[in-house]
Length: 251
Image 1 (cartoon, one colour):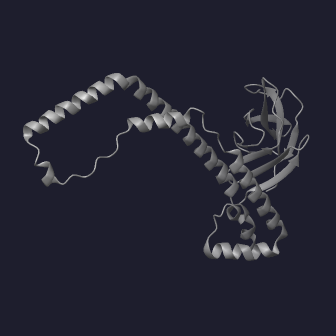
Image 2 (tube, rainbow, N blue to C red):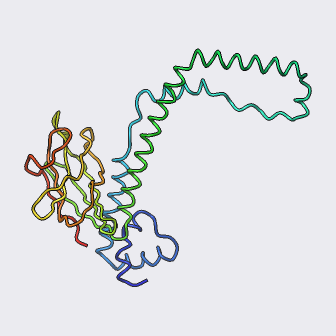
Image 3 (cartoon, rainbow, N blue to C red):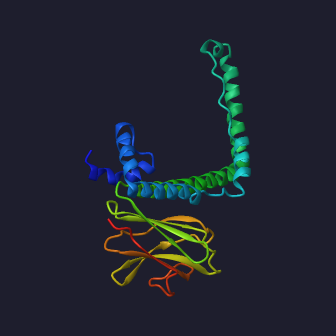
């Protein structure tokens, strides 16, 4: 591999995406390249914080819901050899079938509403998990991009921010740590700075002081990312002075 190409593998190495000879070759390069070592350290720290930021506290009712569903799900019956099944007389088999059908109908009539509610609850939880998985996947792909570059900044107090940009994907990720919670009715909003204008790039969860956000929209010609405090729901244009303005990492 050409030496110039090795510089583009910092993101993939930090995400353990390099294997075999390719990984060994990059580690030899890493031992002699201070810039790549620093970038790998930053990306590794960002990936670790990303995992923390993406953790989700399960709803309080989830445990009780699962326990209720366990009581309604039948265990798989043991396998019965065909020879043993022939010992049941036809009339007896038909009687058992009618009894089982009647029992099922009675259970359905009594518990139908509960079953529908449980189904909806399960679908809601499943949808939340799938959404979180998609978000994490997109964030991980930006971090693992061969050309991912990072920049960090210090905000008011002890808050810090890390901006990761991947020009090949035309996407950026913002990782905040230690932000104070916004006042009631307010939300942190992200912006792309495009040659003097600010383009909306997404809202942060007001309940989180540490969070990872995939910026909405492409990087395109943006040179920086801004953070402002806006009314809940966000604004079309900044209504307050930016709390932070971070330059996008150079290519």
